[in-house]
Image (cartoon, rainbow, N blue to C red; front, side):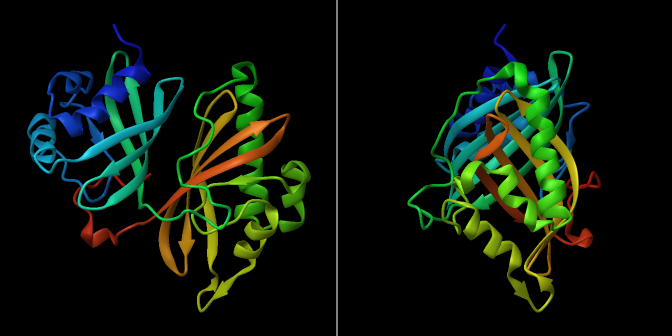
Length: 253
């Protein structure tokens, strides 16, 4: 049997191919969908993926990681427009039973010439998974949630952060400036709480909720950590639709 990461790669690729085989990894009777724009139980995944495949989509799984019963992937989608996404799947035994995602229209390259997906792809330092999980959580809590910007440089070695955010240049100066920017609603970027922190080796994904320019927003941040410092960052931000517009009752998080 293929490992979980390969099963998820095949599942996501079947959106492109329409192949129903990889869908068998999903327990559709127990499947909990957290994308608020997706109906739950309205059509089987076989029917959905076959319909999507007729749109000639392109799906590329850039990197995938495993943390306990969860697999999380960083993906490129080309449908009617090009999107970048993070996909999170929870296994119960051998089957997928729950799914979250965060998808943003592709932008960039950023001021440092980097795309939203280039950079390192394979996890290393798996013996440091829990240490790195703690570092990423502490950074998000200290700097992004509690806005202790004086601590920013202490998390980044010499301010040398490789940045894949499509709006920001490398280093901490651009990130600090973005966090200090104000809008009519107060600070333009406001993280409110962390919902989960997923990790494999030197890669850590944090899932957070907050506001961007006053709009309720989901923030997914992927960090690569080396020698106890943040060295690389990817992200997607997605506006959360109002509760009245949700197509299922499971919540974004």
